[in-house]
Image (cartoon, rainbow, N blue to C red; front, side):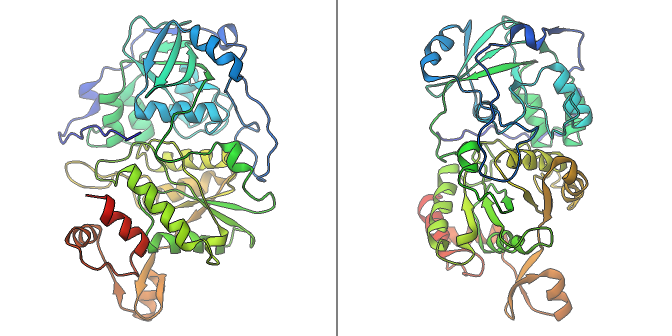
Length: 431
């Protein structure tokens, strides 16, 4: 698939001016009353040493012989958008364990207000399905399709009109329409949310081949820490130095490996398209596979759509990577942060995500590894900014804007900044 990107507005408006607060309209049915018996959460044999979030790795896919009859039981069919398809895939394969479907109203409210499921288990962001279709009601069976693939059957157990301004204030820390996550909630999602269990039917073909948590766990060592690195852009020299040096962190075991786990869902308008990013990752793997650091690096891809929710999204990423077998997670400066589309000001502090991640690490069962602030120097290559200042080294800099201009103009890109193999792909594929 090719990811489609929605338009970004530049108006300065509060979400509360665009959206009504929660109404009294709520429909709910008990989960046990309508749960399809074929949806299930199963224990699988783990190779990675990390336990899944909640203790059990969810697998919602029905047997091949049952898929046709399950799909035929639907009352209505809806075509998922890119973002929704990522959520359905992670629900069905266990990436969002312990969830067995889209959150119902009680689960949604609990996560929005307290970052916890009703059971008390920490959970970063709500995972919800939206609709503006008045015909969809409690008990409705929905066949969810995406670009020719039957992905899942959902049985609606709860329908409600969410308090979207509250959701945004709690989850994004702002109700300003200048925030991309707020714009998504306000302008892309329907008037109502629906929750209920899923039965997995199929997985779409994406530009990035996305392994399931079970598949990835089977490839990870069972006696070593696994340090996850999240990114949504090509990996350049500073990124590579950052995630390979994370293996030397004081809270990481000596035999650890790093998992580079880029997201492949919809990103921001200015980001490099998914197919191009995928090619840069593949050539970099090939270039570095025989190096010492390359031998301790694993690669996989995640079907996830960014919220740009800063601190709470950092918790969300840690939880997801826990389900994929990771014990540690690298938290960069201003991770999952965003800027105002009008003023350019940051919505979050540089270390807000790191601070929240460290405070919740033990509860979550994933340790945070703060990223080093690395700079390139002529004297010693990549060192921390503090060390460079102490030694009075000359620091070399190349802005993203300058880098893109050099690419367009055919200028040589210094190899201290970017890998030649990555630059070659960007020149050939990115217009």
